[in-house]
Image 1: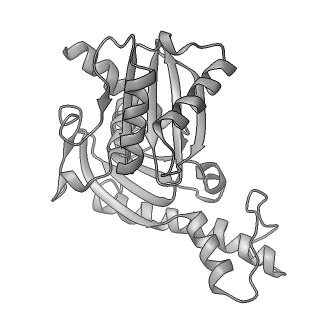
Image 2 (image 1 turned 90 degrees about the horizontal axis):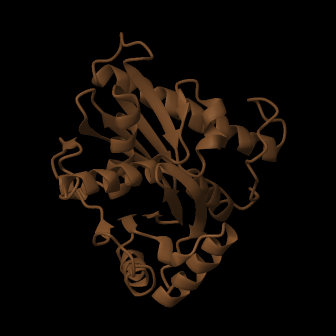
Length: 269
């Protein structure tokens, strides 16, 4: 049983794989004050919901963009979940995955491990030119060539950040729920106008950015088998219906990438 952990700024997604199958996955708030003991209690409770015992875990892999939480998770795993590991816990870094993807940016060590894991997972699945858009605390665009080269990308504020800014920095704009979309693009009241701005606005942003990236990657004439746009992350499902360029919705992409990297490590040992 593989325990995969993806630590993000707002949420931590954890998953359990039995062989190739993801049998359980959960999204937790990324609380930097959580101790290793508290994390262990949470994990044991979640595992019990699907009838899994901690001693059946034989592998652990972690990707993190939050150093403080990474330390707590590693401590938790080593204290409570490592009794039957077949090999040491793997913490993903640009250095230890360099055989899985060629990083072509100026400073490879600056690239978030989640972005690299997503890029590896996407390429392994589709093996073509890719734009992977992760809708998390930040929205990231990651560009991968058909030769499995990480080319770089773009970073912009996420949807939750935008919504918080609108309600906190303006006197009359309320907090809104964007899980139900606007009736039309031209909002006839404040809430509908805000929903349109967020959903249609971010959708248009995705389409515009994707078109520019496609040109810069030399893929303007590529068909759908040669160039794909993949959406992942907690809010991907909200924006996907408003962005015509998104071709694939892959909510478990990071966990799948962690599973691939762990399996590759096993084969190389």
